[in-house]
Image (cartoon, rainbow over all chains, first blue to last red):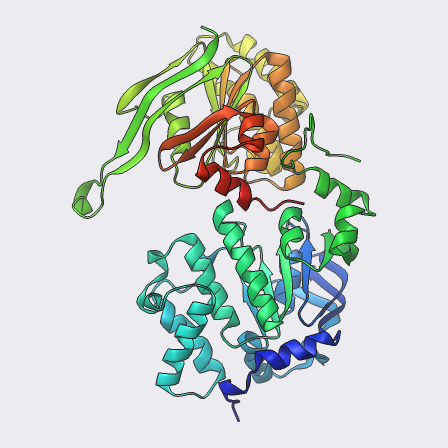
Length: 285
Length: 244
């Protein structure tokens, strides 16, 4: 039986978040492409209501880790070991149908490039409707109301229901993507560089919005980024990834203020900082 | 002239052309921009996408003709583009790419080879070893070094840098920014540094111009812009930067 949408209670989720329960747990994950282990023994856990920032440079394996959490590893990549538990349930042991139901409802993803992630020939309203139709058994009228609600929750007007992706600005598109991702109030949200393609002023709005939604809905978030100042704005915990491994992991405050690893120091020091006089940027420690 | 470049009331409008011309309104990409780049210094031009910064870059190096106003440059000028994957011809060797700007200047072949090697050494690409190799054999950061070498081979006094590090990983970005600073000191270059990233612009620039919708809303010393911004848009941009 498909559950009723009304059964989702944000307050209940918030209450549960007080207890430090782990929603997503990655254990010893190994993924190989050809001869190369692009993910080489990754362990992560995210508690309800917490944001874990996964930081690294291109090719470090951070996006693949995110995709693995939905069991959506691209063709050509082979999982060589490890497990991912969603509320204690190993996603790799799920049946196809169970996995399909999990994606979008229990765990959802926001991609970096909203223009390629959305369907260009479907209106925004229809794309959100698709998410509801896939997971809930509700009538047309109710869906219409729910679509409006979810659009408003990402600060988009109702009128966008009939708009197509090309009619939206980059920031609006990314918020529409976020609307689709949170439509079913998932327990886990994977955000893959969600603000990298945006202008700074829009980026700020988007990060504020993500943080607010996260506080309200108490989902566990895996926030993939290369930018430590973005980490500072959104994260509770940080994991630094390099060449398929987590080389450092901890509370945001600890990792940002007193990083242990050379590589983390370099990643933090190589970005110019506002108001800090620097003759050269840190490239090697 | 104590300035390497002077831009006076520069304008570029793009008209809605062709079939859909009635529907597309005229776009005032650059709408009356005046500033100058002092010799040996960096003028940082910062703004969000679509504000007209790249159109200015193209007019300064002469790729685009302004509709109104003028650009005067004292000496040679050249440009480094954002994406070193599309700015280098994949069928040409590094030697050919870097030497090409000299072909039209009548410099003798032997001298071209010498200058190419010397400029590759300046960008720390180890000269001779990479001459016969192709762009795809290099990483993104190395490719940007090749693009910088090409822009320097004619010994310009003004270098326009249009988002030169925006497509690079942060650690590579730092390498390139450090290199650009060293080159500026060694060769007494003037930079017009264009970027959307306020952090990078602060690091690189002496004078900063903030652009919005084709106009400069504020020009000031770097210190003024970042510690006492006057224009509300500059303030908004600065408030948007995530800091730690």
